[in-house]
Structure formats: C-alpha cells, structure tokens
Image (spheres, rainbow, N blue to C red):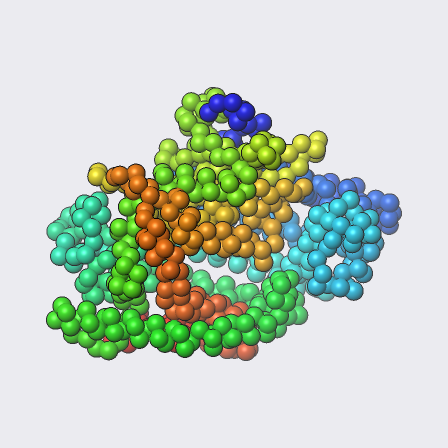
Length: 631
C-alpha cells in the first residue's frame, strides 16, 4: 500500500477478545446503558418544560448507542474458531438482551420522551399525516436540529408503545415484559441450535456418483459403523453441490430430508414464540402480531400484504405450471435413459439436479465450466473494481505488513478475527475527495462453528462523535463458498457471484452511509429499504458485459467468451416462477402464523404440516409424505 491511501485516520477495531473480555464488555455496556437512562431522569423535571429538551431526553441514550455499536461483540458467536468464545458470546448476548428489555420498559424514561414528543408538536404533526416521512422542514418546525433527531425521538416513542408502556395497568405491563424476555430467549436458543448443529449424512462412494472427485476427496472418511462411507455436511459447500450433482435419487432424498429435519428442538420453540407474539399484540389492542409490525412499514396493513402475495401467486401460477412440466419431462427422459422407474411425480430433492440438466440443455451452461472462470480471488478483485467505478470508491487490500503498521497494538492478528479473512481499507477516489470510508472484511470459506450461509455483518456502525468528527464503519461479508482443493483454487459458480454481489451491496451500503447516530447507519436503517441497494446491484451480475469483465479462467487467465457471458445473461429468468413461488410460500406462511383467524386457530395449528402444505401447493413439488414416508 503506497501513497495517499497509506494511513487510515482510524485504526481497525480489535478482534482479539477472549471469553473474559467479552463478558466484561457486555457487563460494562449494561452499566453504561443504565447510567445513560439515569442521567435522563436526573436532568428532566416534567413540571419544568425548560428541562424537557432533546439534549436531556434523547442525547444520553444516543451517545451510549454510538459507543456500544463501535464494536459488534455478538459477531464472535458466528465466526470464532474458539468454541468457548462462541458460547460465551451467545450467553452474554442473551443476558444483555434481558437487560435491554428491562431498560426499554422504564416508565420514568418513557414519560419524559412522551412529554417531549407532544410538547415539540411532533406528535400533532405526525397525527395529521402519519404516512409521510419526517423531513427537515417537519423536524425544524418542531424545534429539532435535523430530521434524524426527530426520527430518533419518534422511533423511541413508538417502540415504547409497542413494548407495552402505554398499557393502563402494572399487571399488564409486567406480563408484557415477561413475554418480551421469553421471546428474546427463544430467538437466542433457536439461533444457537442452528449455529451448533453438526448434522451430516454418510454415503458410500457409489452413492456420490456425479460429484467431482476433487470435492469427494475433501470429504471426511467414516470409521466404526460408518466405515467405507464419506461424510457430507449441511454446509452449503457440500449440501448444494450434492443435490445438484448426485445422480442417485434415493441419496438425494435422504440428504434433503435430513436437512429439512435438522434442529427438531426448534419446533416447540417456534410454536411458543408465535403464541407469545400473539398474546403480546392482543395485550396492546391489536388483533394479531402482523397488524402490530406492519403498521410501521410501507404496506401499513396485513390486508395490503396479503393482496400483494395473492396477486403474485395468481400471476406466477401459469408459468410455474409450464416450468414444472418441463422439469417433470426432463426427469422422465432421464429415468428412461438410465432404465430407472418413473412414478410421474417431481420431488423437492429433484429440483437442483434436473434444473442443472435443463440449464445445460437450454443454455448450454455447465456450472462447473462456468465456475472455472471465477476463481475467488480474481472474482472479488473484479467485483470491487466494478463497484469502484460505479461509486467512485477505492478498495485497498491490506497485507500483513499494512495491518501491523495500522493495528492499535502493532500486531496484525489482533485486528483479524480469522487468519483466512481478507481485509480492505475503503476510500473515496480522487474525484470524490480521497477521504476514508471504513474497512471491509471478506471471510469466504466454511469452517467448524462458523455461520453456515451468506450474510453481511456490520462490525462497527458509523456515526458522528460528540466533537463533530466521524467514527468510521467496518463491515464483514461472511460466506461459505467451496474451499480450494489440492489442484484448484476456490471456484465460484454464477449463483455464488450473485450472492457475493448481493452481500457486497449491503457492505457498500454500510461503508457509504453517513448518519449522525449509529442506529440509523447503513443496514441498521429502515427495514423497508435495507434490501433495495443489494437487489439493485444484483442486476450487474446479469449483464453479459460485466459478467465477462469480472471473469478470469483459473488456468489460462482468459476472460470467458462473449457467447458464454451472453448465455449466462439469457438464463436470468430460468425457472424463475417456481423459484419465486417457493419464496412466496414462506411469505404466506409467515402471514398465516402471525395473523391467525383466532387465538384458538393459532393454538391448534400444526405449523410443520402447514409449512409443507403451502410449499407443496404453490410449487407443485412433493415431499416424502407423498410416498408414505414421514417428513
């Protein structure tokens, strides 16, 4: 690293925590949070309007949040190699969630904010036009320095109402508090079961026919009762490739069913959470949880959401029927060619296998051949170069020597949470002023205890310090892409490229965001908007010109041909109706469990059965129950 981008004005955050230091940090947060709220109560006299100001009522909380979100301690539970650190982080996060719930239920703080909300005129203004977002004019007319400050107050007031602080009696408030704590505990348990799950299946080499030998060579060999078998985990780098490539339908069914049935302990937790959310909504006077949550979103009502979902379902159904028939005919032909029985049904474990076959036939696309043009290092370099041109950004990859120089401790490993992670300092380019934006981490491959999917995690949230200077953000892209083999680097297929573009979109959103308060920074902002930047940036992965631009064959260094890039681009809507209906089934299920016809209907609902019914009904595919086997 040389020149103008040598010296970031803020060092990277330290990633060298231990179980002991994480425990101490969470405990310190609790003390600081309590002190911030105590300061509000101490400085505000509700009988003296002069003391009911934004500085007294909101500033202590917001300054605390800015300090707290200067490091995401929860991140360790998703990525650390140290099992003790992962478990301690989960335990302390759960403990702190209970503390946070108690803090949010403080009536003395709520009363101060309620007085300010009404005294400022913001409440009256919002009542006249609640659907309109708070603008600078609305905020200044209500006496606030800027729109962000007014938004923060309204958020706090509305959240307090949703948390039951407007309930008339103490028993109701106490019960609401109990519900909130239990729901948070359930969410933590639910996630922990997924994070700690080590589910797998064992297969003979013959059952793995169709998978590449370099993938098979990486699989763990069984001993004892699994002697002669190979271990296939639920990590996407195993599971997705298995369902796509393995020819043996029975083996695919075993793998798919095992994956669907992992973490059975979460089934009763899910039902308990749904019942508690329903009870909490009814305590607040809402008919159901969906009405409570959607009220603050763009859709405003469950009816609007259901109308949208039903309209999409109706429009997608005819095309999905054609797609399913095509899949079915492809399966029939394959069974005839291999002299296998064909029962006239298409199952969920058939999807990836036959979709891949049709892709080869219709678009002459072989995922393995496409992946040869996207070795991970050059793919990332190409993507960042493209983002740089789009946004006027420079990404500088940091070497071990760079990290030693800029680390607060002088030790490179202290600012890297895992040795396989790559890290960039990110800057505006010369045309945008050359100023620093923050840090980007990319953690590409699976390992024991790591989060199993693809996601963006904000590590530090940007904000304005009390002295007016900027605190810069850091963000991490966590993936589980295929690991390199002895003969090949990690190779990404086009679906991986789309995923990486999407998550980098979230990362860019965090890096270019400029907010006064950390609670509004980047992906921490409005939920209705969070996915929009990433979804827009995905479009670049379907433009032939840019697909080719980021390609580089791992052996020859050549870009892919125009023809191959155009065939990839042409496949954009391949089987898209069925893919969308599969997602739609989850959305409809979400609405059904959160807006039941009655409390009794929710209590009697078989959630597992209904989830499978909806998925099968919308996609036309079948599960094991169709052949007399339990799900």
